[in-house]
View 1: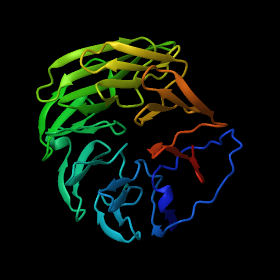
View 2 (view 1 turned 135 degrees about the vertical axis):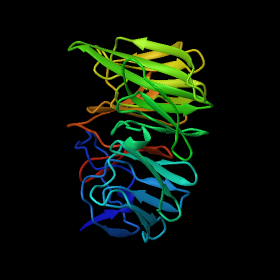
View 3 (view 1 turned 30 degrees about the horizontal axis):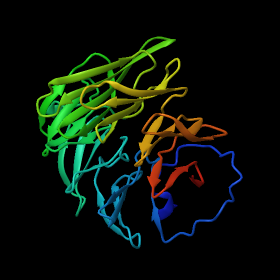
Amino acid sequence: MKIIKFFLLITVFNSCFEQKTNIEEKDLIPIWSQNTDLVGVPSTAPLIIDNELVVYSGEISLTALRIDDGEVIWRGAIDEKNSIQSNQLLYDGEKIVSNHIHDVIAWDKRTGEKVFFKGKSDGISVFKIGKNSITDEGYAFVGDTLDLYVLNKIGDIIYTKDIELSTAGVGYVNGKLFLSQGKTIHGALTKGKIRAFEALNGDSLWIFETDKGGFIRTSPIVEDGVVYAGTYLGNPSRVFALDAETGDMIWERPGFSTFQMITNENRIYVNTQGSLQAIEKSNGEIAWSVIFESSGTANMVYLEGYVYHSDHGRLFVI
């Protein structure tokens, strides 16, 4: 049995790095701890629901803890053999929804009981590590054999999209879907596309293309009418800001690959695996950077002026 401390639940323990800083290390005092029975390294960041529950993966069951004291509130069945195999847990206000390998499962937030299960027999085969989204009508999932499944709130297919290039992630804002795509043409050339669609019917709105790497690691982030996305395996890779209505480029920042990306009100934070880059949203200028001494592949979290990142045994607050 292992112990998970609440302050470490905000990130996934699958990276290893040290910061080159002289900042004094300080102990974080645990509020509570809870025994767990992990069968593997959690592949999704824990989900905080209504500031009441912490839902985490890594056990045979999806598990919800009360946020105040860590008491187990419910355990949701998966497949009786494996922990959740996906990139993220989605929450629509009533249900927790996730892919599990190639299937899609929804659980009731109050009880952990399965609300629906959709798989191969329903015409669904989603991408195991795709980054998916909640929509006003239901859900958008990256496909394993198709680029996109758009589902309603009971998990039935509304429509699918099959587009050239593989899709890594899908974002949703104001009735529009934004797909990040990439394809390696040969060892030195990877192309990328960001596509925008009408969510209701899949009609194409615009396409942005680049030969400076593929958008193969992160979903597009859409905020205040701007799409932020970064390429991977480009020469050189770069981060782009695009007009969400037209797809026109507002600015680009070359120099590093995007492994993960999060934002706050004014900045974008890019994990390049070798560093953390803080980029100004307004113009793409680098505000600051932190170099890692080894690869950093954990999920990042931004909260009230701090970026949280972890390795296998420590939590870094930047």
